[in-house]
Length: 476
Image (cartoon, rainbow, N blue to C red; front, side, top):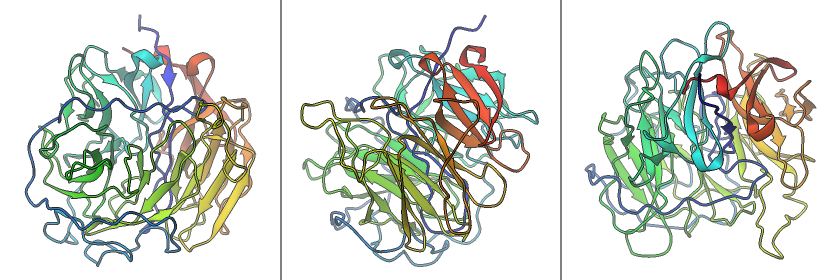
C-alpha cells in the first residue's frame, strides 16, 4: 500500500515576459503561498570543483532601481545582445542557428504528454514526486515519489525546475536538496523512457571552484538562446564581498553534472540574493531571468533580466514587489509578458507585518510592448498556460491563506491582454500548482491543490474541475 503522501506547494512564479517567440508559461521557486517565507540554509561546501573553461570576471554594475526598457530581448539566436546588456563572462562561440533536437522540458518520459513535477509530504519531510500524463490525463498510479533516503527535496518549485539538461530528448528535473548526510544544493534527476529513476542517486550540479558558503539556489532556462538548457545559480562572491554572484552554467550537461562552460557576473541586485525565476524553455528563444532582492518573508521586487546570445543582462527592469510570478504571452502578440503578484507571505517581525496598498493583494502585468496593468483583491501562487487553446496564455492566481483566504481566479488572455479574473467552479480555496498539456489535446490543464495539508490534486480546464486524486495514490 503506498505510503501517505501529501503535496506541498512551493509557490510558483509563472513566467511570461521576456522577448522572443511565444511559449508556455513557467513558474518560479518561492515558499508556499500563505506561509512565511523561509530561506535556504547556506551550503556547507561547493558541490563540485569542475570549472568549465572560459569563465572570467565581468565588469559589474548593480541593477538600476527602475528601467523603462522593454521586457526581455527579442533578439533571435545569433543576433546581438539585447539593449542594456553587456556580454557576460565565460562567453564561448556565438550560438549558431542549427540546434540539436531537445526533449520537452515537462515531459520526463518522452511520451509526448506533459508530466506533473511537484513536492510531496509535510514540510519537514518533503519528497520529490512525478505524475505522468497520458491520453486520459494525469495517471497517479504511474507516478513515483523519490524516497527520503535517496533525496530530500526542498524548495524545488515548478518553474525553472524542468529542462532537458543533457539533450537526450527526455525532460530532467532540477531539484534543491540532497541525499541524507550530504551538502544540500542543486541536483539533477535524469529523465528516461520510464521517467525519473526514483531510487537512483541524483547527480549534484558541478559548480566552478568557489570558496565560502552560498545558498546555491538554482533555476533552469536557456539563457543564451542556443537551444541547450542552462542553469543559473546564486554563488558566493569572488571578491569576498557580501553580495552573491550570479553564475550561469551553460549546457548541455554531462551525466556527471558538468556544464559545457560557465559565466560569472556580480549580483544584479547589488546585494545578496537567493530567489530566482526563469521563463520556460521552448527551444526558440532565450529565456529571461528574474532575480529577487533579499527578503525576510515580505514581498520584494525582482529585477527582470533580458537574455540573448551573450547570456543574461547585467541590469534589468525593477518590477513591483511580489513573490509570485509567471511568464506567458497573454495578448498573443508574440512577445513575452510577465505577471508578478503578492504571494501572501509576510515578514512576521513587529512593525513589518503588512504590505502597502500597491503591493497587498495586487497582481501587476508587464506586457512586452511596454504596457502595464494591475488587478486588485487576490494573492497567492501564479501559474500560466493556454487553458482554452486560443493561442494566448491565461493566468491562474490566488489561493493564499495567511492573511485571508483567497480563492484562485483565472485571468483569461485576450488581444488587449489579461481580462478580469473568474472563479474555477467547484474548487473553493484551491492553490494553483502547475499547468501543462497532460492529455495531449492541444490546450493546457490547470492543476490545483486543496484539502487538509494540500493532500488533494484537482485537474481543471480553468473553468471547472475535470478530475481529482489524493497524493497517497502516487506510488512511493
